[in-house]
Each structure stands twice: as structure tokens, then as C-alpha cells.
Image 1 (cartoon, one colour):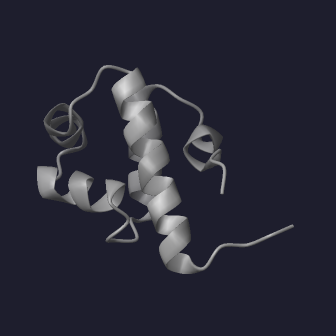
Image 2 (cartoon, helix red, strand yellow):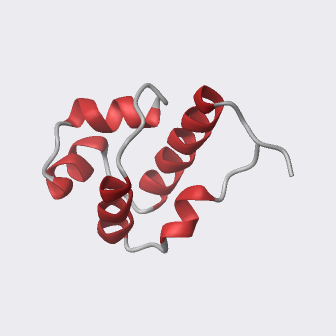
Length: 76
């Protein structure tokens, strides 16, 4: 099994989140409102700039109505 360095992992996670968000028809603004967080935080997560909390991962999955594991199913 190959592991990514933290920056590459965060970027891959963020890119996957962006894909899933768009597939579900959410804008960054809509997702931020539903999560009660700043839109800039969604942007930073999707760009891999910040390492979001596991609590936010849970909330994102709930809002997007997806299984948690889908957020981590990305190719690298």
C-alpha cells in the first residue's frame, strides 16, 4: 500500500470533495450554509489548504447524503 504525504492527501481529499459536492448539486455557498461554516473554509478544504476535523467530515457526509467512505475514495 502506498501512502501520500500530508499535503498530497489533503489536496486529493479536497478534489474528491469538490467532485462529490458538484455531483450532488451543491455550490460551496450552499454547503457552507448547511454546515454552518464560512464559505472560505469550504474553499480551503477543497484546495487542500487546511486539514478539516473528523467532525466536519461527518457533517459533510450527512449534508451530502453520502457514506463517509466516499469522501476518502480517491485515486492517487
